[in-house]
Image 1 (cartoon, rainbow, N blue to C red):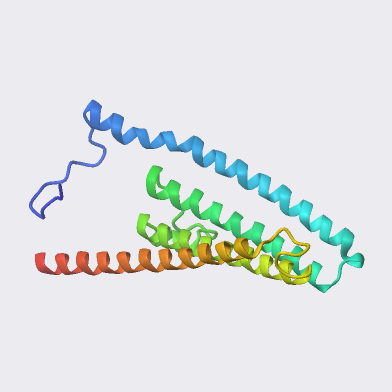
Image 2: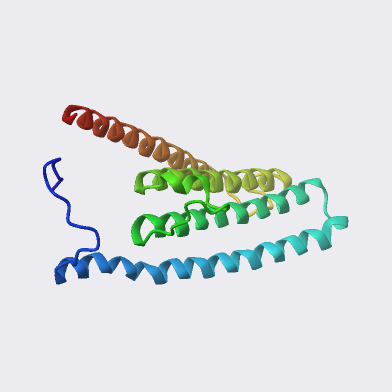
Length: 195
């Protein structure tokens, strides 16, 4: 049910009836989920430091490709951490409660115009980035260790499926962006009709 321009809005701070208050208050059940994601991000920080130490301590023994693989692993951890930040901050702001960061010098630029649709597109792009890193690592490792199906853990079928899944991620992100664009155009057209 949408509000027409003539429908008066309830006054700010008006008390809700018990059932609407329960339904609206249920959004706070997501709080432990976001706290759990913060803990997961802390685990990724530990993993990053461990991988960085491994790279630092083995640099004299590594060749260029091994260093590249280690750096790709670090980038992968950072991208997953960025994904976690987007989900934690954007999800909390969108679905639980306002963070009231307006005017804060460290407010993320994207947070000022975040909504569920924008969050979906940003998450899809982050997943594509993470998938790209994994696919690049697979290609480098498969080529570095004698090719697909020889001394690596990668089979031709496994590499093919990883590539197909990556392409599906890309197609899904394009689909989400197109649906969002069509939805925005429809909403703008409906708003123009009412004016």
